[in-house]
Length: 245
Image 1 (tube, rainbow, N blue to C red):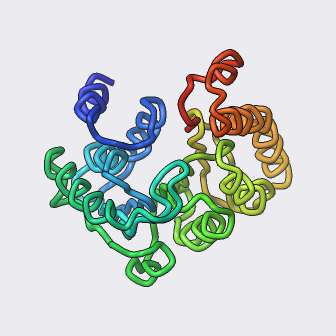
Image 2 (cartoon, rainbow, N blue to C red):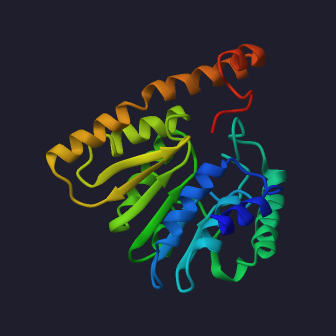
């Protein structure tokens, strides 16, 4: 725990949307891996999460970061029109990996996630999805990249039960799945384990995910209030005043 806290504290100036609890979940899943295993991250932005993954993963674990740094789907309410920031995000990403001492360990594919599929042959043991949050690309990432995850491997999805698009994507890919079991969440980061499951396990996984819908409704309400410039009202209802993630 002390090692994790030291690493997380070192990333305080790295931009990104990841809480300490979410970072700790990534850290723990990466720590469990063995040499020869592979981590794939979809949506790296400026490197906050990849620095955690790469620092935690044992030597011999392959680390692949996929992000086009194209100026679109850049962050909350930043869907398009950020071309000028794109190259800056890319350079900051590389600089942050260097500062964390993990740049040599990480392979960066500067591509959209669907275009990078053929660049990663073979199995993945840990998949972290924090890419485009609209329904179509989010569901495609979970389906296409999730198919590469080996049995016993993990899928973590950011902005679950926070983003409408991501939550809808989960509803068609994980809610009633023969291969994914819901294991819990840290704020809006959900965790699934891959492997064949029984009817009763699927029912349990579905019910545990449905139980998160009140949390989802609350986050959507906060987003509406913040979009309407009603931060005091959102805070009165329990919001931190920040975009929920």
